[in-house]
Structure formats: structure tokens, C-alpha cells
Length: 183
Image (cartoon, rainbow, N blue to C red; front, side, top):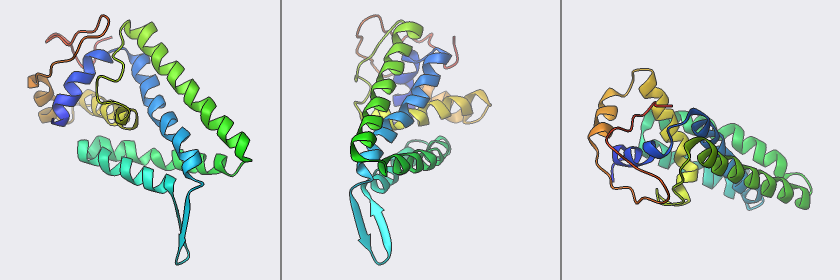
């Protein structure tokens, strides 16, 4: 499925600005929470120390770039301070670091679910791609920002033409009248 089709399915379920903001923050909080324990998995080779956190950041960045290169690059740039913060927390005592990671993950789910329930009045569960979506939602959101600046017009046209069935859960609808910037 093309990025335009994926974005077309995602947009009608994320129309409110507050909900979009918590999804942007939530993507990085999700990643942060996983990077903390992954920072403990370390491989030292030739004076270079690589961790599981580095591998995850690289994989997410590559995937983000394959979705949409400009938005993917913007999303990937913010992974750098996310990784740095997670590595700093991983150096705390193990129990404390795990407590921070779990607390951040719980907070992430609370604000994202709250954003849907309070501001969107609709939910979608994991019907839009499963947990991998948590890593790449910033790409979707940065793409909408590029649209708002008048950039990526061809992609916006493709999104408008894309027809992706969205399995309704609750009161969701992906109608033709959905707009990328409605409030």
C-alpha cells in the first residue's frame, strides 16, 4: 500500500489539532520508552560501541525515509535527542530507569487515547497498521505540516484520490469529505 493510501486512511481519524499534537509527542515517547532498555544491549567492536537502541533508531529512521523522504527526515532528526535522553536515563540505576521507561509509556498511552476520546470523539485501535504506526506517526504529522506550507502538492493530490477502506470501530468514518486540516 502506498504512503498516500496509508495517509488517507489515517487522516480522518486524526483531524483535531490537539489530538495530532499528542500523537506527535506520543510517537517519540513510545520510542523513548523502548530505547531505555535497548541501551543496555551493547556490542563493542573496534573501539565502537553500538546498542540495541542505535539499531532501533536506525531501523525507524530508514523506514520513515522510505515512507516520505522530507517528512521522514524531519521525523528522523527528532530521534537524535530522543536517543540521547533514553541513553541518559538508561545510566540511572536499573529500577529507576525501568520506572521512568514504564511511566513514560503509560503517560504516552494516556495522552494518545485521551486525545482520541476527548478531542476526536472516535478511536481506531490498532486497525491502521499495528504497533509500527507508533514509530512512524510523526512522518504522517510532518507530512500534514508540509501540506499546510503548500509543499508536497502531488502527494496531497494522491492522498485525495486514494480510496482505502477503513474498518469502522466505534463512530469512525473515512468519508470523502474528510479534509487534512479540519478542526
